[in-house]
Amino acid sequence: RPQARHEEIIQGLFNENDCGSGCISGGMIKEHLISFMRSTGHIPRRIIFYRDVVSKGRLNMVLEHELSAIKKACASLDPIYNPQVTIIMVQKQHHTRLFAGNYGVGSTIFQSGNVLPGTVVDKEICHPTDFDFYLCSHAGTKGVSRPVRYHVLWDENNFTANALQILTNHLCYTWTRGAPLLFQLC
Image 1 (spheres, one colour):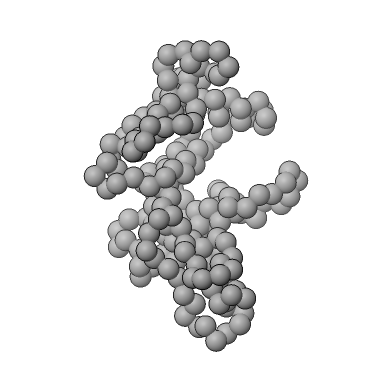
Image 2 (cartoon, one colour; image 1 turned 90 degrees about the horizontal axis):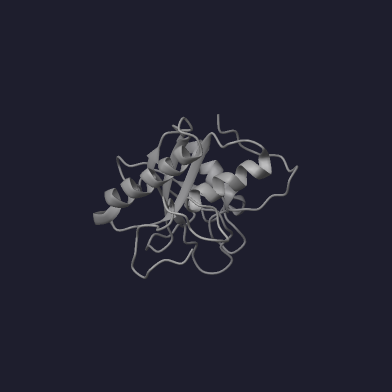
């Protein structure tokens, strides 16, 4: 949904007021939960919420507001409904670039000389205590590959680094119904 310029907090995740004709009362999270239930017949046990990066100074305020909105939207469906929530910040604008360490070995680089799609870096250049990683999910066809930085802000699902990295990489691609799911969340 459209958002005011320079506004880092996502508005409309949960609305306690009626939103008028054409939408379901309760905000975006409730709308998505109801849509999920209609299409699958089940209520989600886990919510994985990817959002755009925010400034460090507003990080706690944004996390508190958005996590609260997600929890309120869930409770508005059923007071005892409390799925596990993971919130991940996605940062595309940064100055980090990935280069193949063994450039001369053809099986370790893409045709353009960039790192292979699916390359993950979660050591050395990452924060020493935070749960973050860089993922280059795409094939860099020209120039130098710019990975996306993923910073896990909240994780009630207790993901391992590998599980979350595989899930994130798979979510960067589209698959059709009936296609095998190549990862397991449990």
